[in-house]
Image (cartoon, rainbow, N blue to C red; front, side, top):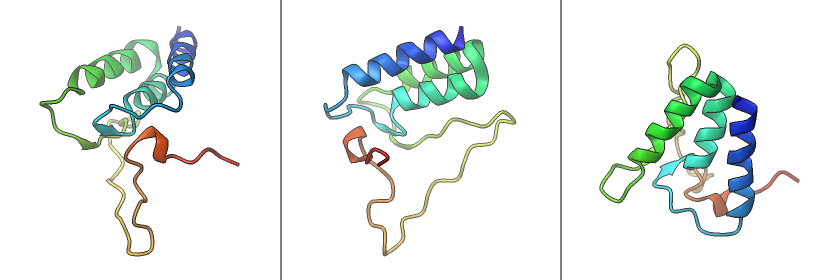
Length: 99
């Protein structure tokens, strides 16, 4: 079931590739959903993805919101260094594909 949902998320990402991301969070909501499904499975990961999508609206906060690991701990927010002014991608278009 998680694989099927993951494929649906991937299909959405392919269909919306090249458009600016309206997501207020990093990583984007679809990337968050794919990672949550992969890490936590269909039931818990799916519910995490739905909650995240419901939080993504103009009146909510924004910023770094990673998927918690299986033990419930979230990764620390990446720190920007002087040598890397754009270490945190702000939209899907800022992420460079792997070569």
